[in-house]
Amino acid sequence: MDPLSALRDFTVRGDLSKIVKIGDEFRFGNDYIFPSSASTAYRSKQGTLYTLETLIYYINNHHVKHTEYLQNARTQKIPSVTLPDRKPLLEYLQGRVSSNDAIESIVPQNSKVGDVVSMDIEAYRPEEPGFNGVRIETNDGVGGNEGLENGVIEKIDYVALERPLKDRESLLECRSRDFYGVLVAATKREEERQRLESQQRKDGLVANRRLMGSDDRGGFWKEGEELGYESTPIPKMHMKGSKVGEGVPIILVPSASQTLITMYNVKEFLEDGVFISTDVKMKQMKGVAKPDCVTVQKKFSRERVVTAYEVRDKPSALKAEDWDRVVAVFVLGKEWQFKDWPFKDHVEIFNKIIGFFMRFEDDSVESAKLVKQWNVKIISISKNKRHQDRAAALEVWDRLEEFVRSRSHT
Image (cartoon, rainbow, N blue to C red; front, side, top):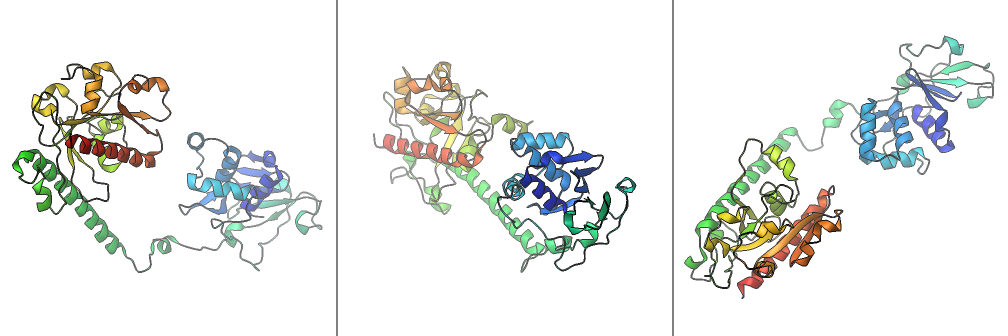
């Protein structure tokens, strides 16, 4: 019996406790002995065969959280089972499925099993070259060898019986494709990415120069048409007691690092729909000064619309006419954030500016207790499920654009 089948048999029978490691080998009760480093017939999705030691450690620790399991396996210097392989491997070892695509046939059908050598168990030496597994036969007739005396070993050379299915070169082969074609495609994608980033920077600069009052058709941004995009209006924000604000709308974010959205990560969140913590971004930008202004656009929607916004975190640097362009603010949840703002209270602030409060979905209610008293939209994201960030970013954009449209008609 091969190592994988033996482990499955003991798992189904509930006899895992009978598998004992002695030195560099595993003893399966009085039935089998295999080297701990023996390769099994279970191939990972990464293409390598799992060793017996890896599978035994996993089946004994499958209930442990994956991150903790990886850390423990690394500490004990045992190769780990990857996350995609965990469930199908567990189902097979526990007998819930009879087979799966990851299992390879090591012993060909109708092939002759290796030579059988009778020997005393004390005379067995695991370091014997060319030996990949042994089976201990007892006098109870296990395996149909009733004629063998008690304490002899049927020695099977599993390495000699293995047949290669793929080699390194065949794994690298792709039908109708070559690496030159892949390289060309990757180069084109990189050039397109750089072109788009350059275009977006240009769009932001043009938006800053073009004021709504210079357009006789209602303030539409003509430059967008020149660049091949559909133009979108930059709204006029009517604010009581001040002139009409014209130009690129402004979004304010807190300068405090304890908030989720800052000048460091706002671009990735609003443009790409991906949340990266401020700490991580600060490490990536080590030695680079924090920008005073960041231009963001809603570029991951299907609409070919250029909507440029300026993001700033220094309200004290805004001029009176700049405040007329402020359309949104990410709130910290602290009163002092609004000190010296040109508004009389929170009611006026969040009547003329839409507020967003970003929080982790499992944070305590107390963290948003004060914010719930304000007219602010609470946006929750997961600490670990990054694929959910896009939905949160889209919710910010949808609410922001709806607010801007409503303000442009007042």
